[in-house]
Image 1: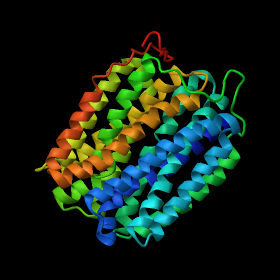
Image 2: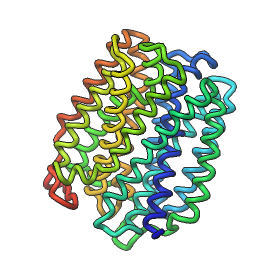
Image 3: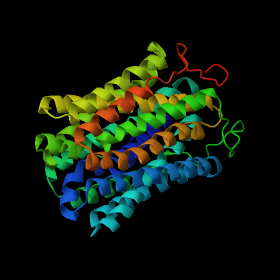
Image 4: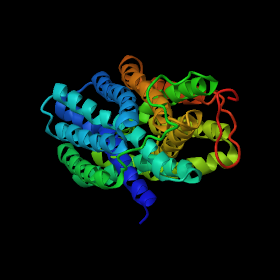
Length: 386
């Protein structure tokens, strides 16, 4: 196996553990956790929002550390933080303890992505970097997909599930040590400093914020929505997560699809798909077939869109790939930080239907942000042309 293939496999696994297990599996087990620890929807949303806030902080820190210390140390730290956080969730005796553990586990995702973008820029030849980045990014979908069968197998035993996930994080940390390069900075990469806020970056920030906000309808409350609408508990919610994760694998083709159809068209298409997915899962009168179909749409849309924002950010800052990725992914997380508690508050203050319709509308609104059309082949987004 080549160095590039080993890096791709390890990066895929790291993203699967940090995003699929440490960050998004919380929403899958939320109904059972709510019952065991007596959490209200508003409190659940605040805890989820805290996880996303931790991500916002650590992804900025990660880009800085990666540019100064290299990818291996930061990526190893991400896997270890995910493991410790998930072990804390497994042991949580109270809502306060749970909040701290969820926030710690969620912070691992911020640490994980920038070093992998920098490692790809070092190891993979330029013509293959977009494909490698979007393939690694699709690891989220596999982590989500695996967490579904774990929920089906273990039922309401969410503590045992997170203990198993923590062991997986430890295994990935060991793999990172042997496959991710220690030094990733090249002479052309000037570390540090705030990136220039040009037109391309501004549009990316607006679109990513709105998409991230909308996505919390299912990432944070998907398990609760199918529990309310269909009476599904942990095992049924596991089916939704399998649907989301399996469809998300399509996101590995984000670079290829955007090169063929244009980034703007792909962006609008999959934001519309996300909105339809949210409605199919969360509206009154949904059926098991509709809910699972909505999960498929949402999973494919979310991973495809994160791949689009990854390409967009790296293209705007080609000499600082870790920072370029950080801008898009940070803004998604800021949107999620705002969205999770807002969705929970809307459920408490209005109705589930109001919350679902409003958040689907946010996704549609994000689609109104124009991207510069992508040229055939390698992408070429520049601030002066955006």
